[in-house]
Length: 80
Image 1 (cartoon, rainbow, N blue to C red):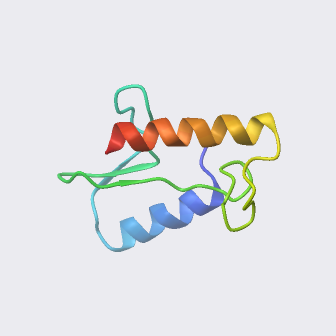
Image 2 (image 1 turned 60 degrees about the vertical axis):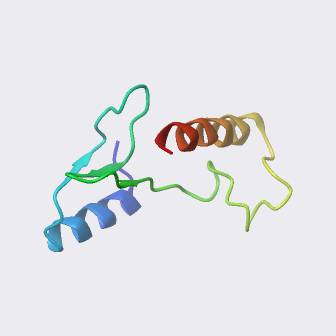
Image 3 (image 1 turned 180 degrees about the horizontal axis):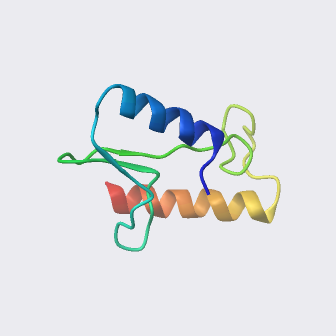
């Protein structure tokens, strides 16, 4: 499923003629965008599920947010 924000990023990348892959598996993770021929990955993250620290300075409020935050951490470690 593609979010509205992902569609905006997709349109921008297309408009800028930047070649990319969208939602292509990379090992056990699926980044939102991979810029072809580079090591650049783009992840589009919403405020609620990914627990934006500016909106949730005390951390996750429920198990669902916690799962997303932990998974985001593992993805970031793998990508780096």
